[in-house]
Image (cartoon, rainbow, N blue to C red; front, top):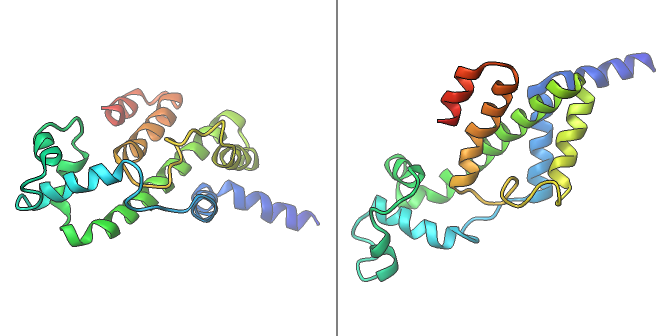
Length: 171
């Protein structure tokens, strides 16, 4: 029985594997949606940035051209084609979810000093809706979700007293 407990503890001590297990659970539990919510407004803007010939007569899209409050779409438009947007969004969604979960796991571990407690804390944060508002664990890719790639690691590094790294990530 002690051997099983030791293997169980080692699983949780391996943060990358634990974060991956949480990611798999997250994807199965929450899922993924494309073209939902704000994306119905954001995707045409991204498509217009990629191909300026699109949406020529659309007043909404043309009124927002050049008036972005984020660099997310500008950068993304340089990295993909219109036909590849769904795949790129899914990859970014999975990547951002993993980094976010890994950083949250590390923050919990920093405060609890225990791999199993950190795993339980991250797990409960994902599933308990009142503690995890939609923005933090959304089912779609957007600029806020992408920002969490930097925010949660920055918080972790701040608590680790690595202020320069934290400040660089916070921007």
